[in-house]
Length: 261
Ligand SMILES: Nc1ncnc2c1ncn2[C@@H]1O[C@H](COP(=O)(O)OP(=O)(O)OP(=O)(O)O)[C@@H](O)[C@H]1O
Ligand SMILES: [Mg+2]
Image (tube, rainbow, N blue to C red; front, side):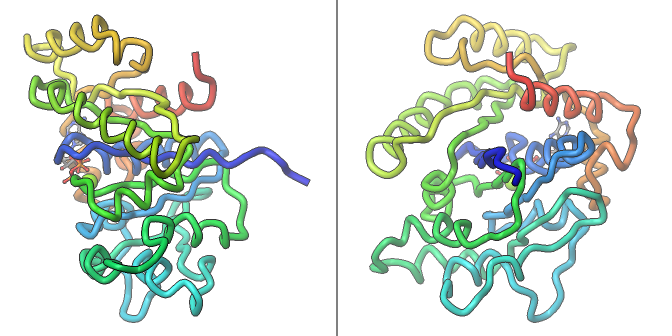
């Protein structure tokens, strides 16, 4: 029997547009290429991860909304879709998910709905990667309540750096109140542009900061328009154009995730 534990990783940052979804899609694909079994869960009502994996859910398809709202009727395995790429599966999102926040108000145990749903998945995965919306909504709280690890993409821009402090405080709060086992696996600098001074300045600040320096991963995701093109085309970048910075950066990140340090 295979007893390797599943690593459940939230990709979170309350700041918008810092590369969360690109990280989930492309790290997931790079891990799957290295023969890891990967489940991506799209917990963002914008459903960018779903679209970025080329999935257009049909009428009546189950989504993450169904499994967190109506946990008794649905078999979670039935919401898992195969993507076009071996080893890479997805629980899709839908715009309906935007209502979950309000619909769950007053429901006891509302922050543990995703956790309970995932306990009923019978397929074993090496990695579960969960994409989150750019806000600390109940959806994000559900993700942080069930994850063991958090990966934080930080855009190499001063605003993104400044927002990290608040994010770390939020994580401390979640650890204290909901999920003591949660730990930050790493900060991944994104949109790094070696031609710009600000990119280098932010990297320097990350390296020197007491709170962040030990969490800074070796891999940096460089700015690369092929990443944006591939997402728009509904493919992970490694399957869109294998020879580009974006592809090599995510392969390197996958290696670092598998063999840390
Ligand atoms: N390293 C990169 N280089 C160039 N473009 C990128 C890079 N990473 C992501 N992008 C593009 O930038 C845009 C924003 O990235 P992404 O959607 O991953 O951010 P996000 O944090 O998920 O945003 P949101 O907070 O809205 O969910 C997308 O069009 C994406 O394809
Ligand atoms: Mg996103």
